[in-house]
Each structure stands twice: as structure tokens, then as C-alpha cells.
Length: 326
Image (tube, rainbow, N blue to C red):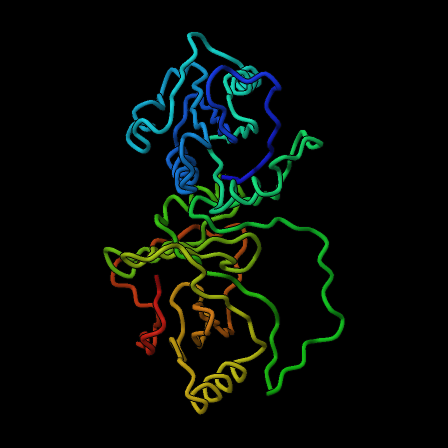
């Protein structure tokens, strides 16, 4: 899923009748997988029909027709137009422009969405600008739960190690754990689209199923936990790998003596064998300091740990009310 924004100025000869500032035209064909999120993001802008035309343009879908979903989400606020014969993708885009009534036309793809305030901020920049014929904004790639992704290349490690205010030797970033609405859906996206490999599933109980993925020899670089009831997807914790067991234990006692909100630990996880201590941060996520993280090779077969598997083989559990797994 991606938010991708490109806008063009409408024709000089608009159709008869009142002309809104915006025409948000949403081309679809044979898939409504993300259409609900697309529509909701536009409707949440709370711009009335006098100022914004919203229309879904169906390129003659043969499956997964959009009209029932459009009616369910938007009622009569969003128009639904269906072509009488199949169109190519480019032809459907062109029809969006032809059917637009607004001064500015936004072709918003049905697997994209806009952030709050998108149209009001753009209107403030574009209104009464006769010298501008097109506008482009930033876009961000996101996963199905809205977590922002960045694919990069060419990072150069620092030659000098980071110096801490206490004795602590960090080897590097180990992994992150994200909470998601559906761990199976997250697994399918990251393995199917980004090429991660499954290391294992850990079933804490019948409701909490953790997923662990890898992209190198580390047991996991990415993990998922289901959101707690009523909670939204978020960053749950970041793990930094330390050089020795001494670093973990020194960190634990340092945190304890400073009355920090220790989430878990010292303990050892059953699947990756990491000896760990977690501390909750003011940012709402936790930091894990860990040692002994397993490495895997290509012969590893994914393991499914049964319901009742503890998060700590030494018997530890969550210690701070501020620390939530999901």
C-alpha cells in the first residue's frame, strides 16, 4: 500500500453547474482490497460536495465490484460510475479526468490514502494560482497496518563506537517488534512482497500469536504481535544487541537502581534464546537489550510453538503496567 499524490489542474471549460475546487477520482478494477481505507481517508477530510467531487470509476470489473462497498462506506456522498466495457488502466485514468468537474483533479488510486488535512493544506497553496498547472507532494510506502517503510542502501557504519555514559557495549540494532491487526496478514505481506523468511510462530495463548521473520542469519529482524483490544498498530519495542551477558545484567541493575519501568527480564526467550531486559520509554515503546541471539542458516525449518509457550523460559513475566505486548 502506498500514499502517492499527483494532482493536475482541471480544464478551462468545466461542465455546466457549480464547479467544486476538488475532484477526487478513484479508478478501480477487480479489487476493493484497500478501497475502504482510501474512501475513509477522503471522507475524513470533512469537505462538502460543493467543494469536492468524489467519484469511483470502475473499469468494468468482472469480480469484486466496488459499488456495494462504496454505498456501505459513503452512502450517496460518493458517486460510482461503471464503464460499459473493459478499459486499460491508462484509459480508465483518462476517463477520470474527462469526468472530473473540479478546478483541481486528484487521481487517487484505490490502494492509496491521504493523511488528515491533505486537501485543505494543498488548497491554501493552490487557490488563485493561475501560473500552476500541476502539483506534487511527498509519498510514503506503508504496510497494511500503516507502518511506514523505508528501503535504503549505502549506510556507512561509524568507524568509532558510540560512547555511553555508563559501561555498555552495543553491537548494533537487532530487531523491531510491531503490533498489527492480523499477524497472518502481516506475515503474508512481508514474506510475499518484501522477501522476509519465516523463522517461527509462538502461540502465547489462543489469542496471542507472535510471528518472527528474518532477512539474514539473525533468528529474526522483524516480529509481530496482535494489537491489544481497542489499540492501534504501533512500534512495541526496539532490540539492541549487546556484547556480553554482563552488559545485560549491568543494564538490569542500573535500571532497577534508577526505578526505571522494567518491562521484562532478566530472562531468556524460548525461540531465539536471547537473554534480555526490557525498559519502557517515555515515547510509548520499549527498548530491549539482549545477548545470545540465535543465528540460523538456510536449512532452518519454521517452528510452531504451541499455545501456552512462555515468553521467558526462566519463568519471568511482565513487570511494569506501562509495558504492553500488544
